[in-house]
Length: 286
Image 1 (cartoon, rainbow, N blue to C red):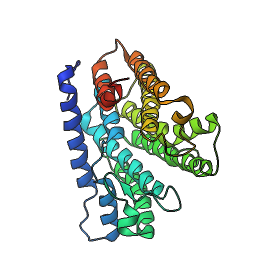
Image 2: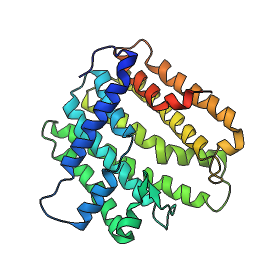
Image 3: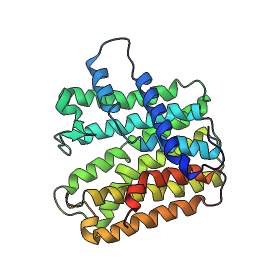
């Protein structure tokens, strides 16, 4: 889909086009021949306007490695379903108790708490089903992808991250606890998205190592940038401790480290331009 080197002027076109393709495929995957309140809540959650950062990362990694875009698309959508399931659970009154998400009412406000929980469970299972039924991928590769995503969500992944977050509400956590929470709530899904792109593209160990170093730093930059926007949120925000200017410098340091991980490699512009597009606003004035 992409040439070996993207001109800078093409980066936003790539993001916009790929995001549109992701949205269209998600719409198709969540279509139902039977009217269902659960399906309606799933569609409400997933099809809300979003940046689609994680599926775009999967697609960018596949393009970077010369993988088949169509093979990666199904997996990318699976990862977005997991992300959306985690968001609607995070928003519940027993969790973060939010009322708005992506510029509209949270799913539990619109559909009720019980239906929202059922929609989240269904999104998690649907994410595995669409990989299991992806006939263009070999059976052993499908199994690897399912194992990857199950581990990402499970008791040592996103679920644990949410638990740590909830426990942190009762007091000021240690910097190590904050780092663990950020890794499990944000970094782990970024890494799963990148790892999935490596798997569908049959990356060599050397290629995968570069991609994962890039992704780790991208995830750290994303979390720090998110914390800058939410600096007055609660005690789990590291920016309140180190200061906004220091946090801004860290975002730039992480992005530079991400660039360095893939510098000089084949099709590096694909990933480099993706990172720059996500954080262009963060770079202004830093």
